[in-house]
Length: 267
Image 1 (cartoon, rainbow, N blue to C red):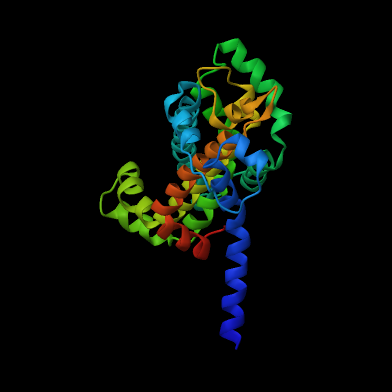
Image 2: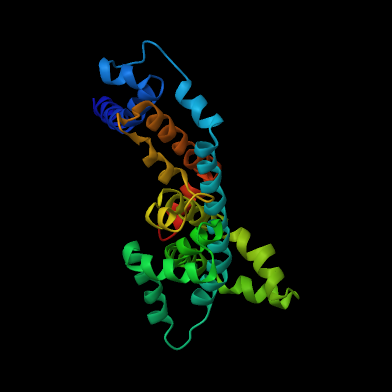
């Protein structure tokens, strides 16, 4: 009886969880006139016109390319900066280390709108507006503190004797860190990369303000579906479905590390 209740509860939970995604998929396979004209639980006259428009119209598919570019750049930069910083916090004690560690987290807690105007003026001065690196660096303000916080928890769980043994065996710090230490915390690296990717992928305020045309992300382009006749629901739904795909792929590739990370780290 208990097993049946648990099964029913899980089925109900996943049903409610997947309902919005199914409904968006349903609308993406219908025309806008069909969506507004007839209520239907499933598409009776399936059309792939919305997806075809996204894949053939440069103003649409370029948004996905732009998003993937600056999100990948941000993830790489955040990990490159956070790994040595987290190692320093986990292995060394220095004046003000706890205060500095807390200050890093306060950047993650602050609203993005607080930093919007300073970033815009700074990037305008250096001619970085409407570039991928501008958005990638702006997102580092929030992703680097989170990455340091997560990785420090994993690194603190690695015995210091491993470091000492490696140095006795003749390893220099760069070779030890890359060859020995990082593989030991690969679960933490996977979790950190996941969170950095997802935050940068869904963030809209910085991405929309710091870009104009050349680096415009898909989240900002989706707002262009508003016209004199109203919203193009079918096209907007198709874009939303395609927006879910990169995040799902990231989860698939880091799923093993992600499970270990939630069990072992600070997440």
